[in-house]
Image 1 (cartoon, rainbow, N blue to C red):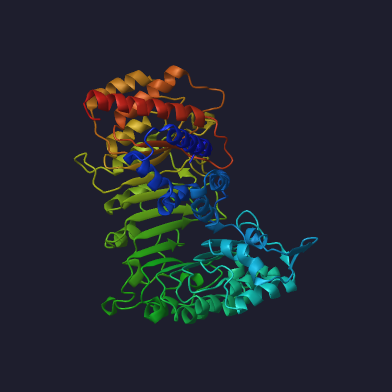
Image 2 (cartoon, rainbow, N blue to C red):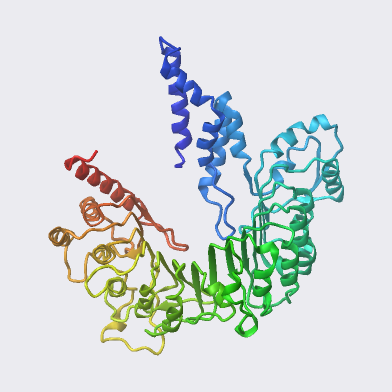
Length: 600
């Protein structure tokens, strides 16, 4: 929703009011239909909900859209009496902290930085309770990754809140989703709130941060949540690696015992390598009745020195409800023996976390030989270890993965290794690997995410003459998009970086490559193009260039629905505005083309 959305909505409301006031037949059928919509709570709430995104992921900063959305919902609640309740319900749906609710207390006492609450009659708490019933999602934590820190609350303040809960009134009776991120165990005011928030309505609980390594979480917080919120369907525990503290390895027994009283459907368990998993844990998990209904399982857990875990014979059908298994692999190019075969053979997604570059063409051969027998596998990803940088993968090393019927290939490392130091050579090599001997696409790949940046030359490798004169990374030229259209015919989504200042390696022009394409008439199924333009600063687009690029995109991607630019951390989005114009031109070209062929 763009920032001007509220202005447009207000204009719509005003025009609606003017048209109704000037209408000579206010009881007409059209007017009655408009009245039914404008006063329909469910319809309005469905529309207004688009202004508020879900609780932000802890890895992402709060987008500007959510801030603007909160303001727009506030204004909508004042614009029209019928809009008030659905707009307020959406406004209070997800809270980044408890502070907005605490401010509604009718008699707060704030002594420099410390919250206390005076005792008041139950009737004066009506506003506090009315708004607290609207809250469905709550996020507690510290800093940018963990939401807004809680104000310091006095012991008397906790006592007052506790009395409300003790009287049979839950603090947030409609709460369904709790996220605790980067909570400090040394000053655990967020943990102190948990008993006041838990209720049978809770469906999802997420813990993220180093506090999950501590004894207070293992012995108190986790068992408490599972005991008091037995209706919880999703449990997520994600920890960070801190080498200066000793983790409490009781987490494994605590998790098995705590979940036994629940009917869990989704478990996300990601713990750092220093949190060594007993080899028997995954076998115990499969046989525990608390995990019998789990349908989605995400695991990043590892034994000491990656020793093999205890396996289970496949005839015993462990975890019968399991339909989605996401495995995080930390043994470089090999499959991690920490995961037993009963899980690997049911994997739907596997992520290789790399701490070094992979340049050998047969590095993944052994892993692919096994994964070819894993029929549910649809997604393979490559990511860098948190402490690593400058990781590159050779396209040759990725070619064996096209033997698997993948739907998505995500390459999230620093870059693809360009052996020939020729613009787009790594893209051509990868796209050619997707095709069989007859030139037909030999897999069902729908999404391809390529690295945005390009790695620096690796120490110890020799390059062709003249390579040392290349001061800037060689990003693919615009002509690489033609290689994508020709070779990846079943592809629906791609993320790619280009240098739009270079049309092709053979000094061709936009018109010349467009003419060559028109003669070939290769089909393309691409629907979504994510583009990062690494064009050098100072080389501005010309209006003619924008129109030519838009015509080229419409010609090679006739089914394209959306072109978006990639936001790169630390890189200025210099060319985004130009690509917005190019996208407008492309959509216009598409409309004209469809109109000419009689497709309305």
